[in-house]
Length: 109
Image (tube, rainbow, N blue to C red; front, side, top):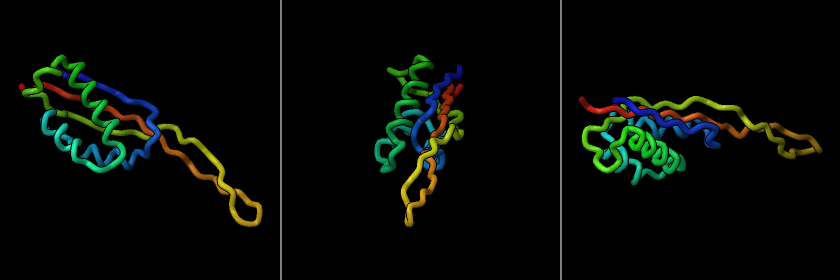
């Protein structure tokens, strides 16, 4: 059985989230939680929450034996455009990137 959890409009760059997702892709759920526990990057907590939600959607939160992270991917969301003051009275545009995170877990069977 497969279960899906999504987190949309996360205000973290998709590249940062993608680097963390490559660590847990294809791992068992318990091992993925252990890897995320010791990770030092900022998207760790959001990935933990989404993974926990996917495991709960599968109905296996109490006993995670046999639950595998089948797929996990990140897509870019809308960018928030902002302006920063620069020299000689000019302005420069920069973007706050957002992303959409999807984690799919399944039984090992």
